Length: 60
Image 1 (tube, rainbow, N blue to C red):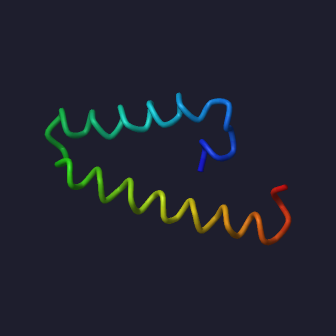
Image 2 (image 1 turned 120 degrees about the vertical axis):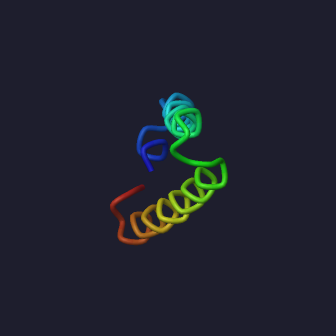
């Protein structure tokens, strides 16, 4: 969602999100499959909100 709202910074935002997820694996808090599930859920939610924003006219 943040990458969508700030497209100029999208690569940096995605890199920081990946690092945050990876750090939880390194710390032994989660497994990779947990990260993947979180990424998939986050992308699904973001797609839904972006679609709503485009339909209601709040985004060009």
